[in-house]
Image 1 (cartoon, rainbow, N blue to C red):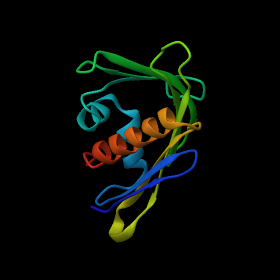
Image 2: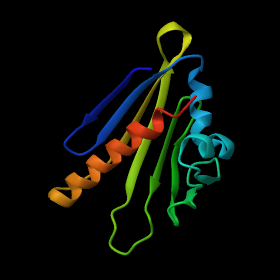
Image 3: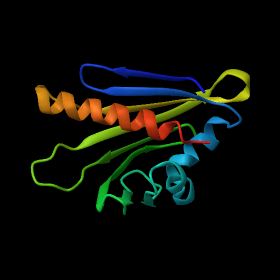
Image 4: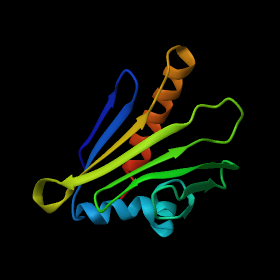
Length: 140
C-alpha cells in the first residue's frame, strides 16, 4: 500500500494505491452501504445515487450523523457535500476519484475542502487529513 498525503492552502488530499480493484470497484466503496460500513468506522450510509440526492452517513459509535448532497457521480468519480448539522458550521465538500494504477490496481484520491483561515480551520483540516489517511488504509 502506498499512501500520500497533502495539506494545501484550502484543501487536504490523500492519495492511495489500491491493488486488485478497478477504479469503478474503488468507487463502490463510497456508494454501497455494506462497503462504507466495512472501512469507514462502522458508518451507516444512506445514498440517493443521483445528482442532488442525499448522502448521509450515521456513525453510531460517535452518536453523530453527517449529511449532504451528491454533487457528482460517475464510474470513476464522486463528489458530495456534508455537514454535521450544527448552526454556523461550514459546509464541506469531498471529491473522490479513482484511475488506473500500477499493476492492475487503482489510484484513489480523496480531496476534502474548503477550509478558511485561522487556527480552528487549520486544526479541522489537520484532523480531516489524519482521519482520511487512517480510514482509507482500511479500504480493500
